[in-house]
Image (cartoon, helix red, strand yellow):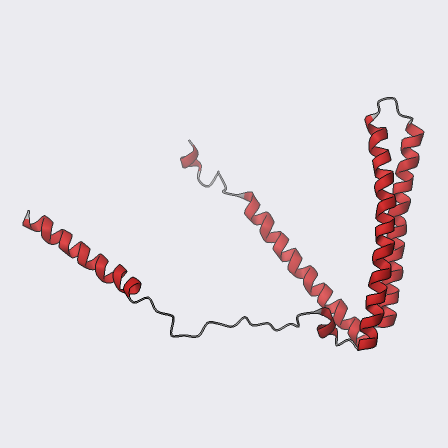
Length: 169
């Protein structure tokens, strides 16, 4: 019995000396918190060092492009809705379905053509140095996305059951 009491006392002493002091003396850390290191600017304007004139031109360009995109999307949604309705109808005319699909393909090609034009317009607004910076950061972002996607695929695989075959039997 004495051994049991002595053993329990030692366990309580150990737990009390390891767990209780940090709780009892909970104080703020003496070390200052790490500041978030940002080696990159907060906005694209800061990164590219845009002039006020360039900022205003880009803002106008964005507004114009957004209006075009909204109009294009409304037209595309209407055509998609029409296509969905025809696809649900078992007696729909095949030529009509293919014609609507061609309309969708035309909308997509127009959107691609406009994106090329927009790229040229942005290139006119920016200086060659700014354009190089922009291309450089785009490549960097693309590489990071690729690495992230690669990790995501790795985690999706889960546990290799062949390796742990004795647990599954």
